[in-house]
Amino acid sequence: MKDLLEFLKAQTKTEELDAIKIALASPDMIRSWSFGEVKKPETINYRTFKPER
Image (cartoon, rainbow, N blue to C red; front, top):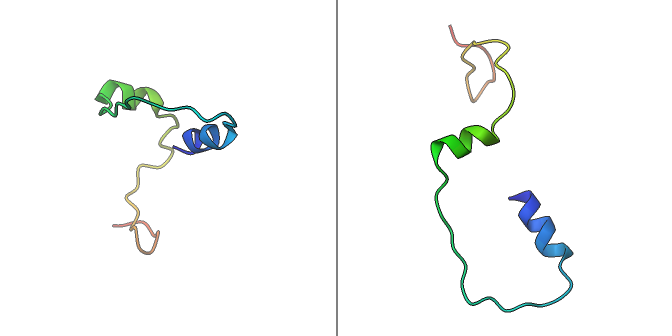
Protein backbone atom coordinates (compact mmCIF):
# COMPACT_ATOMS: atom_id res chain seq x y z
CA MET A 1 0.00 0.00 0.00
CA LYS A 2 2.88 2.35 0.83
CA ASP A 3 4.36 1.73 -2.62
CA LEU A 4 1.03 2.61 -4.24
CA LEU A 5 0.80 5.90 -2.36
CA GLU A 6 4.38 6.81 -3.30
CA PHE A 7 3.62 5.97 -6.93
CA LEU A 8 0.51 8.14 -6.94
CA LYS A 9 2.37 11.07 -5.36
CA ALA A 10 5.11 10.80 -7.98
CA GLN A 11 2.64 11.20 -10.85
CA THR A 12 2.70 14.74 -12.23
CA LYS A 13 0.47 14.26 -15.27
CA THR A 14 -3.29 14.06 -14.62
CA GLU A 15 -5.04 11.14 -16.27
CA GLU A 16 -8.69 10.17 -16.36
CA LEU A 17 -9.67 6.60 -15.66
CA ASP A 18 -12.74 4.86 -17.00
CA ALA A 19 -12.64 2.06 -14.44
CA ILE A 20 -10.63 0.54 -11.64
CA LYS A 21 -10.71 -3.09 -10.56
CA ILE A 22 -10.09 -4.29 -7.02
CA ALA A 23 -9.82 -8.02 -6.39
CA LEU A 24 -9.00 -10.33 -3.52
CA ALA A 25 -5.60 -11.99 -3.48
CA SER A 26 -5.40 -15.76 -3.51
CA PRO A 27 -3.76 -17.54 -0.57
CA ASP A 28 -0.83 -18.52 -2.82
CA MET A 29 -0.32 -14.91 -3.86
CA ILE A 30 -0.33 -13.77 -0.22
CA ARG A 31 2.23 -16.46 0.64
CA SER A 32 4.45 -15.22 -2.19
CA TRP A 33 4.51 -11.76 -0.56
CA SER A 34 5.57 -13.10 2.83
CA PHE A 35 9.15 -13.44 3.97
CA GLY A 36 11.00 -14.07 7.18
CA GLU A 37 11.55 -16.91 9.54
CA VAL A 38 10.14 -17.86 12.93
CA LYS A 39 13.12 -17.82 15.28
CA LYS A 40 11.25 -18.51 18.53
CA PRO A 41 7.85 -20.21 18.35
CA GLU A 42 6.71 -18.75 21.69
CA THR A 43 3.28 -17.19 21.97
CA ILE A 44 3.55 -13.51 22.89
CA ASN A 45 0.83 -11.54 24.66
CA TYR A 46 -0.27 -8.74 22.33
CA ARG A 47 -0.74 -6.28 25.22
CA THR A 48 2.38 -6.88 27.28
CA PHE A 49 4.65 -8.39 24.60
CA LYS A 50 5.67 -10.99 27.19
CA PRO A 51 5.72 -14.75 26.46
CA GLU A 52 2.62 -16.71 27.44
CA ARG A 53 3.03 -19.89 29.45
